[in-house]
Amino acid sequence: MPRNALYAAIVLVLAVAAAVVSFAKGNWYGVVWVLMAAVASNIAWYHLRKDRIARRAAAAAEQG
Image 1 (cartoon, one colour):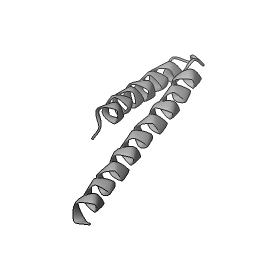
Image 2 (image 1 turned 180 degrees about the vertical axis):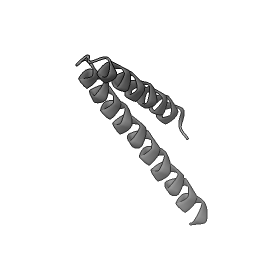
Image 3 (image 1 turned 90 degrees about the vertical axis):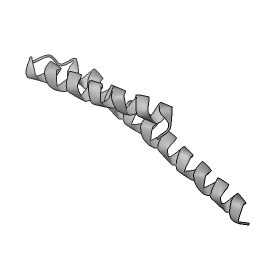
Image 4 (image 1 turned 45 degrees about the vertical axis):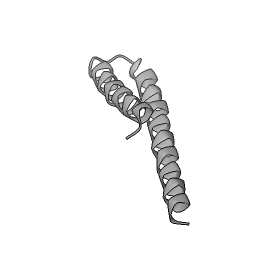
């Protein structure tokens, strides 16, 4: 797993936890945490996909 994807996944988990705590306390700032979780999720998927494509390209270059 690429390092950036790992960091983004950690931020995602922490943002979701913060949103749950915020909503449980009746605070509407949890919406901001949900949005941050969405951005972190997109960043994680982007870097995972980018790494997968690079690995396939390297494997294809080795084979032929």
